[in-house]
Image (cartoon, rainbow, N blue to C red):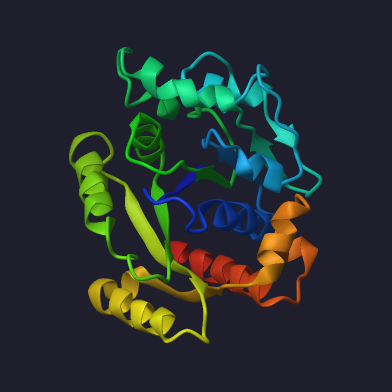
Length: 253
């Protein structure tokens, strides 16, 4: 069975793409067969894995709308065991096109139902639109990256309401694997306060692993590499390796 994991948060800039790319790399490193599905029109997961994005090519836009066979447009990355279905700016039009279609919430689920991987990780765009509803319907697990900042909890209630709505209507098996605290700055007392506050609200739902604010993560992205490959000894790389271990441990329970 393919495990489909949506990396989602309605806010932008919280580490969704970084988490997708590095968790995928860590899973591939332990011989899991992994596919990244880039559903963000910005295509940062695509460039983050060193794959060019060209407008007009067959991409996740066609997969989402059921226009192409996803197996035919999978791109192998330079990382053994890790593939990607790329995104282009064409995906920005998908919200409008989906709104007029029959079974608009289930397009992606049907489209990727024949894929055979250990894990498909979906890099979701910000917001609560039909792209993300499709991602949640197609997934059996969710990871929520949450930046350690003042407004961290703002919007989470709405996200969980959306998740519950999806469970109640179209995907009763959807499970939140965990909330991942990102961009943690140990020099800043606010990060510690936010982390404590999140844990007091969500308890064991929060991963023990915390991703620090680390310059190597930003440098790796600019080089089209996961930080795990860019500098495996960096704090950012170590945290994502730990996340992969914790994620797999939770999956086995």
